[in-house]
Length: 209
Image 1 (spheres, rainbow, N blue to C red):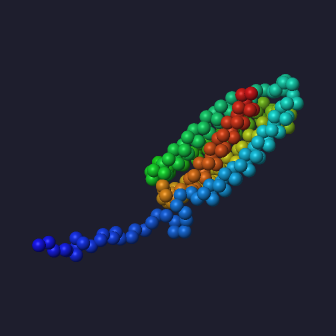
Image 2 (image 1 turned 135 degrees about the vertical axis):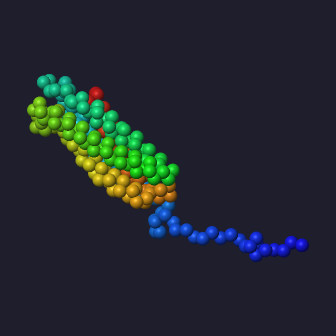
Image 3 (image 1 turned 90 degrees about the vertical axis):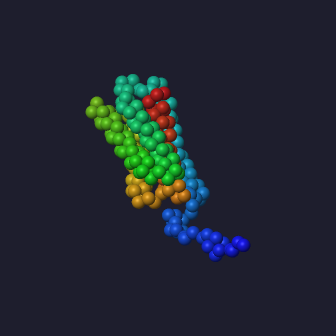
């Protein structure tokens, strides 16, 4: 005869565990937040596009570009390009790490990305310093003024990006982000990739063609 034991028949109900998710926040980056980020990036794209169109208009007025007697742009722009491309790679790895709940990888790659961002600004500073050393300043004609304007505009947005990267990196140390909640990381990835694409377009436009 089989007796029904209260233990064997009792439905298992696990003890509730504290969720790591924000109590009032959405799971995953919300669609509204992502859409807002795309709108923000679109507005920045319009700003950069207008600046580049202005550069092309100025360039079209010259029969020769660079104008005769102007020095070539510094070869250090290649170094800047390599650095910012490496930073785009590292922040993409950070995104994969947070989605895989690899906290150590997230922290490491966010730190690397931030460091590469600082190195990018340093290389740009060296490029400007080289031009200034040969007496090619902002007021040295349209060729130089447009170069300084475009690169300075981009550098200002890199500085803004570094501030946000620092904030996201700091929160990564506290375990805020994980596979179910990582809007800060996603928005940082979107913004940083945007800056990388903008720089590539600038580099080709002002240095290669």
